[in-house]
Length: 422
Image (cartoon, rainbow, N blue to C red):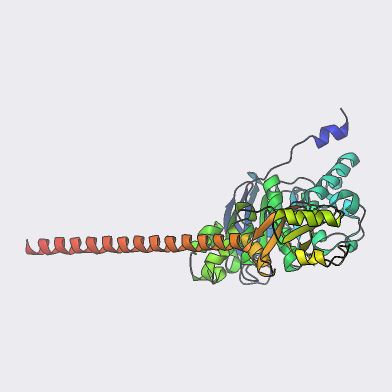
């Protein structure tokens, strides 16, 4: 059997558990530790978020996991193996690492950047070539188009996708991400977040992700570690638990106002009803487009490009003014959402759209459906009603607890009075 067949047939590696035991970092000359005795257990396949104020030690804690920063004290276990004293270079080849602004080497092509770690660990050329194509496809970039490009020839979002592909290329069980989407514009950031969610559904890696953005933490995390100064853990729980029951005022400050609306970050577009919309393609004859609009019984069509990506919204009046060409007809589609986008992403897109709808796209940007304002508002009302019922139930529990305490106090007083009389 050939080398290529043997190597490419291997299944993807899934995540590994991470244990931090009394992990500490002290810098020379500093009276206080930067990170003070952090204890944490992360399950295999979890996406964990570190969030906290600037300077709290979250990035330092992250970098100690792959020993880019050497711990002063404590232990690190990955998959049950103590890696605290392992050769740090070997350790880093087993742990993927993605940073802000991608960190790509400018003198290397996209393919060379992605294949760097596999080359270092001794993979064959055929396996590296196959893996590069697989990784580009995985992050939604056409291998034929992007293989030979240099980082300067890519947009910020494309660079970040390549950065993630490089971090995953050697199939590590653990991926560390240090504010990887912090340097891109908000729309690109939303799409990169969606892409990470999709990738995690496919790969089940263990991901530790640092951010200062609590909304990003809610959207991405299976669990969130809210960190105080010195990386002391204020609360380590699910996004739902932190939103509905913050541990203290410090955590409440991160949650901020509008917790119910923040819960829109917990529901995905794939969880709500997406409607199909009449579509046409750019090379369809104009008369055929007219006929389709008439048959659809709507006042609008969605024009798709040759790759079936949303291109323009076409209304009946646009077609009347087309005069044989769609070149200047219709309104360009400025925003789309993916299946993994949150309802908050979708609501923001819909609110900026005059007609109150947004196209839903697949992995390669192809059209999948439309979600509209009515669907989203119904979801908002359901969340608010759920919060109201939960608050009422919590109030009833408090009242019952107080009543029990009062009853116990009265019984105690009565017993004490009887003893005194006796």
